[in-house]
Structure formats: C-alpha cells, structure tokens
Image (cartoon, rainbow, N blue to C red):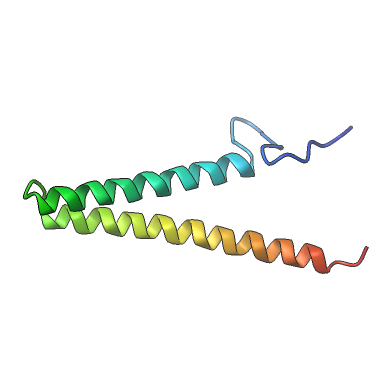
Length: 86
C-alpha cells in the first residue's frame, strides 16, 4: 500500500489535492491582477467607472494576500519539518 508523494496525491471525491488547490489559487490571483490592469487601462481611456477599478484592485489585492498567506504557511511547515530529529 504505497502513497504517491506528489502534490496532487490524495484526490478524494472530486476534490483536488493540495497542488491542484494551490495552482487554482495562483491562477485566480493572476486573473484578478490582469482584470485590475484592464480596468485601470479602461478608466484612463474613459471607458470604465472608478468604482469598478477600485473593486477590481481590491479583489486582486485580496487574492494576492491569500496566496502570500498560504506561501508563508507552507514555508513555516517546511521549516518545522526540517527541524524534526531523524
């Protein structure tokens, strides 16, 4: 009974593994950032409302903060594992 140590290991009931969830979060952060950039460009050209720009930037910021928080937790977990005696 072996366990696959890959990031996508542990797919259960249609729920992706940690790697899939992390990849999805990163993709969402990039999409939110690109949408915010598009909204800013549209505002400069006079084709978008300021409230739409602020909302898009807020969503991008929240998405990036989430990714950074996950990154910090992964680094912390890695450091804790490396401190464990063998």
